[in-house]
Length: 243
Image (cartoon, rainbow, N blue to C red; front, top):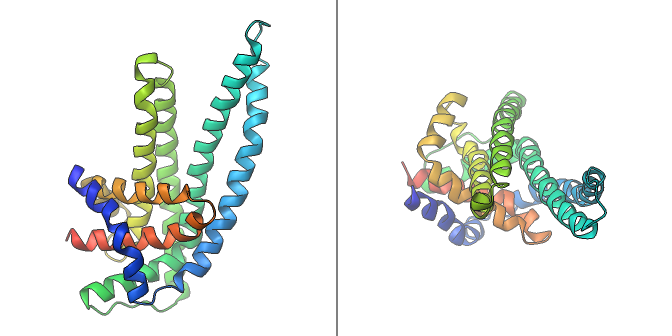
């Protein structure tokens, strides 16, 4: 699995040159604008809500002693929780919204690499299928991701386990982000059950790809713009290499 993580993440390093060589820049426009819009709305809202949540949690603290210290801790904790929830919400809304644009990109990448002719034209039926599939995957994965994240946060309250919780949450987020990116490739050849089986079998690939996606989001604005296309191209190339 470790090798797949390296390969999945490493696919990003040559992705920009691949996009430039094959003139795929047009795919950045719509997906990038949607990503920035969603990111600004969700993360700015998360920032505002974190202080409110911290203050609400502080009302449950019944003592005067160390109140300033406790308030800072609660604000920090609330900020972390709201950010994680915002990131999860952003990923799945993005998956649903840009699916009809990223699926043709994935098909184009596969066509370039394999030389096989793949139908990439627009059709209402195909777009509807991709949209509904995106919703089904998002609903399935968001429930699982939230559940596992909650378990990890609870485990993080145990002092000896706290140091392991943050990297575990990052790996969990990476896995489900990579799942969504790989599905743009899988939807052409597998139903939902088969896709789930494939990603479980290649979980390292999903984690590596998702880690790259999450790290791109740390780059203000530019990362939000680039992440959808770069992660889709990288995921498709990794899946083809793993055939």
